[in-house]
Length: 432
Ligand SMILES: [Zn+2]
Image (tube, rainbow, N blue to C red; front, side, top):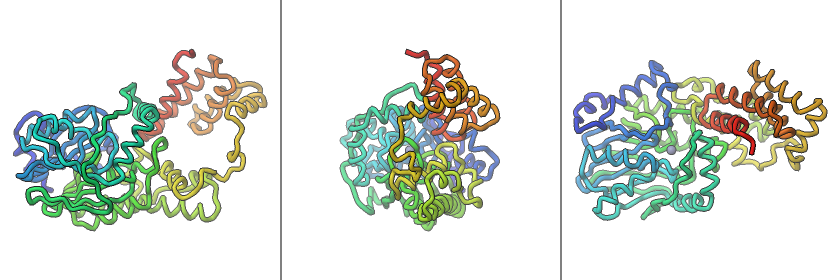
């Protein structure tokens, strides 16, 4: 475990954190709960963990890694617009070395912004290196900026700000792999699809440091995200197996804490691969047998031998959503239920069922009963139908707010909590 003694040698100021390697050891062993250290918690601070004499891990909402090479700094990732200044300040509390090269592990907007803070120092532009699909992602974000603003507010329960723009495009892109050497320090870049189509993981062979990007985030992998673009479950598992074989002494993830120790690192990567492989294999087998999406979602579970691992809990994304993403990648959008091929409008079906039930209030009353006994899935259907059939009835609005607020409380993942809290707020706000 390399971190403990090194950490305390760093006395340059307020940015020095508690020993993150020790905290990570406690989380891995179950001495501390992941619920108390959510890997994607909000907050605008950044903290430093020294990894070696020349490498620091900067913990933030999304992490960054800085390496002093003697010929200029190399940065892996650069945080969101909200965290860029803190990341920049944290690095500058450690070294004055000018930024030479920045590597993006992918183009998500929580990973790319501190570069402009360094470039604003006036020491010339940095060289930004990324996978060749990153510029296409930025163009997609320019096209769908409004949509991404809405879904991010819903996912993170934010009042704002809207989705960021002003992307720092890479200067150099690559396809499969690329070796970058700065001042004698080697960075081996490898592309795999997983959370994104533009992923890069970085291997620093001299210090045996592995920067996984978001391929490891201390949670059930963000491989199902209901509101965002396609993820790649099977290729993600392949990437994890490749990384597990490297013999890394340090794992520096895109979110959450750094990990030290070759055996521990191999274990967490292999277990995460097993988790994804189990979801993938079950889903594909059921698709091949002709099962409907509905049956698959309610049958497939992550492998029992790894599902209780502290770093695989569904606190951000969920395995049920991963199953849907596998279906989306390998199947069509038709879910196998013929009523869904060319459905009636939601409101027409809801009105018909409300009439059959004896009124929308009957549906919302039953929804509240079901909610009270923990039948949140059924309760959600009934209250949503009541609301579609009678959107302006105060009792129905109130029931909808109650049912979705209660459901949000029982969910574990950021994504489900966000969607249900958003729904509850829609019915809490005054009608226009
Ligand atoms: Zn991220």
